[in-house]
Image (tube, rainbow, N blue to C red; front, side):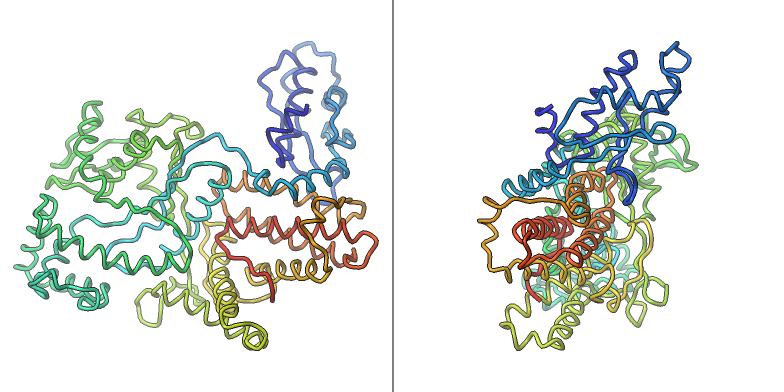
Length: 591
């Protein structure tokens, strides 16, 4: 079985599934398609894991002249055929055939020791995919980024980080809205305000948001301007150098604004905006047409889809392209040119129908398999609204949406004030104070978003997210810093201890903490597979709980078990840091 366990180091669920797979093949050789059903047991139950195959198996074999007398007998037979493994201490069959598995504490300790020497990356899950596209953030040029973009940026970054940790090559795509009819009015307005476009600077235009509103106001009221703007769109799309230059200028100014947000959040993205796919659209629509998918409807070209009462419009009646034309083309490009096997779109739930429709069109075209579990596959990762404390959509006092940069800076400022109130400005250098305030402030905003199931709306509250008690980033960052401080106070060289020390999990709280640490790999795998970062947040918060229980009942420094317990502290800190990394949060080492 050594080879079995090599492959999925760290992933207990998979290692046990491999063992039960052997047992199933021996117990019921005539049912080769039965997959092992292994699940973690709830805390306080009879085992650490459960194998739940006996009942399902009994319903398959009972009419086939089997020698078994019922599910418990099937369970007993599965236990009997289970290959011996250092991993398993004991197995017992309970009730209607549940198999409870108790892991060997000696094997558990050894696995944690190995991770301490070989690094936590040996616990990374293996996913059945080599290259993925994560399409996230995607703000619109000349419009302010708002809290909806914040959610997309934070959730998308975490999904990308979890996939990267799982050895998937991730193409992080910023699908910015840099093309379309609004550019006509922006460019014409720019020409009116600054006849010499070369001299236009960011400072001259000032706030792009205001500039956008002013041009929109003129577009709505001035018929002559409106006509010019519509002509400008045609010229821009036709490649007129003067119009292209003005367009580039507006895009560049917008990018500077976006960069300020990405820099604070430490998010890496590669921009491939709507304009990038423009040259490919006609070819893609021609391909769909050749396959007989495209029909005429009221002058527009559409694809009729089963299950939807409206068709998917891919060419407007004036011959112009729309979101669906760009999105289908981007999907075609990602599948054929970028060779992505999994394409993940992170936008608000309001866009669900649009995604359902164009995914269905792609299936109809034969670009994607009919089964949405097989690769290449696409997923829409929807998320709910950000609400203010009044329960309404989050805004500043007026009806304007909050500027993201200001929001992030306020989180940092508030966190700095709290640190100064605790006298940290006297203990630390100004750099340390600033870095810690930043880690806590930005970390608090990210964690407050990620800990919720993404589909629900969540209430944005600085007081709640910056609270140092409860399920917040502040509490978790402090918990990590406390562990680091315990290790420092021991005066021991922890890297030396990793090589020479031995870990034992004799106390029930040591064992419970060790088991939770060992469940890290399967948790990341579950969070990746279901595209739910909240699963990882839940794991991290429980980890700090298990650690608190261990630390309250097991003296570390100065105890006979000091070496072993310091190693357990270090393993906890390493796994916490990896969780922080996957959530895009910078760890804090002292408080």
